[in-house]
Amino acid sequence: MKEYVDKEFIKKGEIEDREYQRNLAESVVEKGSSLIVAPTALGKTIVAALIIAEKLKENPEEKILFLAPTKPLAEQHRETLERVMDLDKDKFITLTGEIRPKDRYKKWEEKQIITATPETTRNDLLEEQVPLQDISLVIFDEAHRAVKAYAYVLVSDEYHNNRENPSVLALTASPGSKKEKIERVCRNLGIDNIEIKTEDDEDVKPYVQDKEFNWEKVDFPKELKDIKKMLQGYMKKLYSELKEHEFISNYDVNKTRKKRLLNLRRKLSQIDNKGHKTYKALSNVAGLMKVHHAIELLETQGVEPTLNYLKKIKNKKKEEKTKAGERLITDPKIQRAIVNLQELMEKGKEHPKMPLAIKKTKEKIQEGKKVLLFTQYRGTVQKLVDKLKEENIEVEKFIGQTNKENDRGMTQDEQKETIRRFREKGPAVLVATQIAEEGLDIPSVDTVLFYEPIPSEIRYIQRKGRAGRRQKGEVTILITKNTRDEAYYWSSKNKEKKMKKMLKNWRDSNKDPKSKHDPERNEKQKKLGQYSSKNKEKD
Image (cartoon, rainbow, N blue to C red):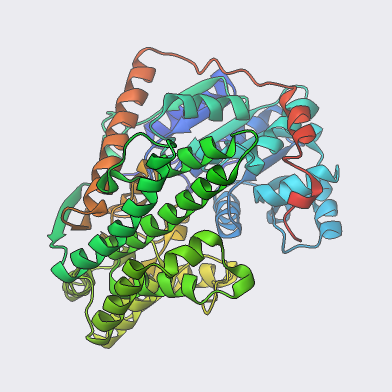
């Protein structure tokens, strides 16, 4: 028989009493500002609710601010807190850019439990409308985002500068594989303590569902290999010019990585007194990045996305074209690649992962299972949706808000409604981009299918965490042999392994981050213009 939390400010019979959640909450209350690292689906929002209850016991009148990267996620947290906390509903509100600034300013004063997006909070802080001195706890969800000029950093700075006894709770399932990044997040948020839970912990094991992992490999077709060689031929030309002018000492087109190109571009940009050769080298690097992206599309997505990308460069208006783009599109090798891609498209040539994804999805639907199908690119999302509909499978897409050429994004209300339908026995399949990876309480699915691997360990952990939240799940990853697919898969796996080892060692050594907040950084960043009014979210 289940036991439930019996605690002031928590509704009776709403929160199952789980030892690991209780342990986390008690430790944070005892040790102060903390980062909680725990796997997806272990109820970090519930832990936050338990900590909020303790804060309200200390001072029932003070405010709580719960930040989340998107409006749907902020609303989701508000709904969860309304459900589990023994407080009047009129004490809660979600503040986003959709509410007029003047109306928001009143709500900051009137409401007690506030969930909000970081950009909206930042904007209101810059207008000095947020009563920071009245906020006893700020919660940062998806805390791994708190780096560089992300709005979390300014909010944290302002909070620490304006609150006599600031208290912070940061939440993430995947902080990253580099110790330096975790320390930077802790420093940016003023965190003194890290709490780590893993699926192997004894108090967690009873609540973790098994996941079955499958890897489905396909061959990279010869026709696509031939086009790849054409694209690499152009890369060799650009590399040889860089080598001739001694900007690089050697090169290997097969080992081209975006990170290396970005580093080279940064190095060239920092050269004083740039001459003609330096500007041409920068143009060469820009060209290499374009071809690198085209090859990635070819290897991981197929004919149509690659052709569309190259045509987009070709069809840009004269005033919009760069030297790198103009030179690329007039090269004979690239022109030949476009002709070949066009011919393959007219023949209906697809990447072999496309029919395999349809086949695997159809099999799972016939077994009565729900499927979440992830892919990097919107074009692939639409193609998968169209092909699944041809198989009479109920399917919907789930994409971000940004409007692109001939491709309208989804509003946050449309995103929320899509998730509601998926939860309430709606479509059997959701085909999604990165927007579905982070935080949102997408209903438990039986199968998560990766159309392509991704090099980020954070996104890899978030994707696979969508399966098996309430019952045994399955994760299937489609991989094209001897391509970036394989490289990206092993990259994310190795980074995940490194992250787990680092967190274990950190916990075993009982180390705190030792990254005290820098009260002067806020002024430094303002002087640098990182948070000027021109960076504000449009209300």
